[in-house]
Length: 200
Length: 77
View 1 (cartoon, each protein chain N blue to C red):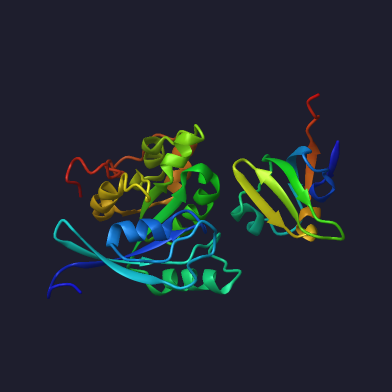
View 2 (cartoon, rainbow over the protein chains, first blue to last red; view 1 turned 90 degrees about the horizontal axis):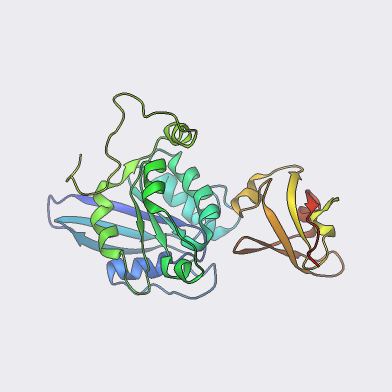
């Protein structure tokens, strides 16, 4: 897989069922995971490799789950993967047309304290339904990179790959503070990962 | 008027006022207090109900729907 001594990061794709995780996975890795237009297609995980900016990422496509309290075998796979790989980066995939439901799971995942990055997928479908997602504001509130993507056309997939290295641990208390409009804590993180600065 | 979610008639809309018992599963599906829901279909003989919440259709057992109290939104003429 990776050349000797190279930095390999494991990336877990987590999200609700039917948000396009497998389609995004196929786009990013060139793999051929089964994609269909109904929820619950992925019942086991699929691994693929992505090389971006001299870094190797092992991306794992995980079955969709509504919460971290599994209710069926596929959800169990997803939760087990998260628990057994505490050093992995988590790519949380949301459906842009169903943001609220996705954010519930996203916050649950963020509470685990793993580095996260958010992909707001199906942004084309959202545009069609005249739904606008303010990804910049979402990024400011959550403190993790948020990238709008369309897996089927490939829009945003490259920047998602580039931003993987900017994934960071979200602090749920900070998020709650920002939602209440508290001023940023002194000495807090100034950079939320826009990718422009070459960052920390 | 207050009723159980399970008692909404098809196409009737209501705002969730309270949820009895465990809320976690319903929250995961996008149902929480304050959300507007619309009854889509209701199966007879204690069958499941399907409600629309925003863009999402959510199917649930009648037992779960009975735990959700809604304030019915007056129908537009």
